[in-house]
Length: 117
Image 1: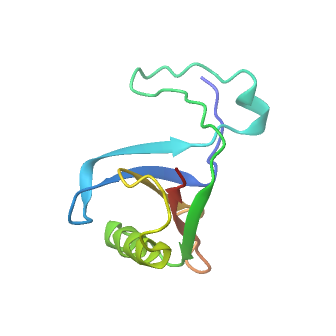
Image 2 (image 1 turned 45 degrees about the horizontal axis):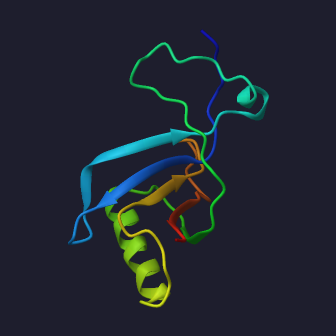
Image 3 (image 1 turned 90 degrees about the vertical axis):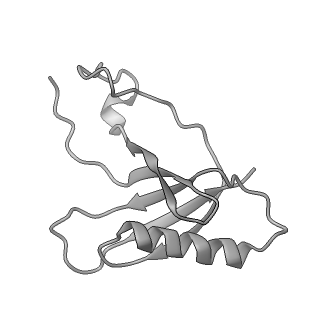
């Protein structure tokens, strides 16, 4: 029954297939605002879970525009190529992050994150 407003980034956990495309399962995560973190409200929808994301080290790349799935896949491939084979990171998932409301037409920020192992 409490409204928290929108937070940034909206983070989607993507699970890549062997060919680099994204599997149809994704997990969308929203940051709980600081004022609610000590005692977050209980979700009324059983499909919504509250998780604590531990600190992590990430490898990241940033791009603009209205991001679509193909953009995240392409930038993930570019980041993978830039990191090469010597860098250890989780290859079974990565994060696709958007920072802007849908009505913001210019100066949009999107990121792909790989989590260091």
